[in-house]
Length: 158
Ligand SMILES: [Zn+2]
View (cartoon, rainbow, N blue to C red):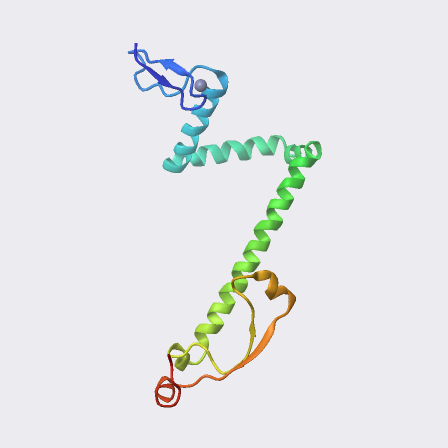
């Protein structure tokens, strides 16, 4: 008889002719994984099924209104973990928003900058190779932007 490893626990299962597509062994945990996988696919692919599941969950929650409250009270470590994850998501979102606003500010700046993105002015210079140096002392440099045509005439670039 043909054998193949269970998709969950990797134990070899004997494939019977009655169930040629069997992917999981008969252990309880593996059958639960199989069912969860099936359900996840079904929820994505079947609108009616998803609606049905939502409705069933709502009905159940109506009958058990304190379920989540009790769960949180009985699983403080779960609640704490969730809270930390949410804080991290919020932090990431803030960073993303900040970056987006910087990019849109840059995009709004003078069109001439597309030719020469570095404008004259004061810049903080820090080491890209060694970030610890950058933390200790930041060099302030005064950069003067010159046009390429001026540079070609007056500055020898080696
Ligand atoms: Zn298994």
